[in-house]
Length: 69
Image (cartoon, rainbow, N blue to C red; front, side, top):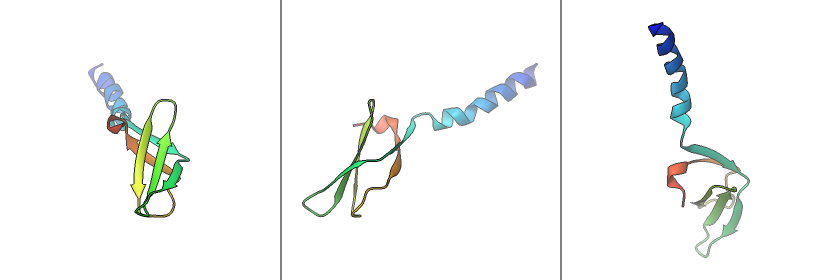
C-alpha cells in the first residue's frame, strides 16, 4: 500500500513542475522608436510583454505566470 501511494504521488510531480507557466501565441507587435519590436501576448486572464531586437515577434512564447504585469 505504501508503494502504491508513493507511485501515485511521484506521478503527480511533473504536473507540479509545469504549474506557473503558460505558453501563449499570436502576439500583437509594434515597432518602438529605438527600432526594437514590442510583442504583446494576451488572453482573457494574462498579458505579457516581450521586447526583441528582431523585426518579428516569436509566434509562441512560454511565460511564468508569477511574472504577469
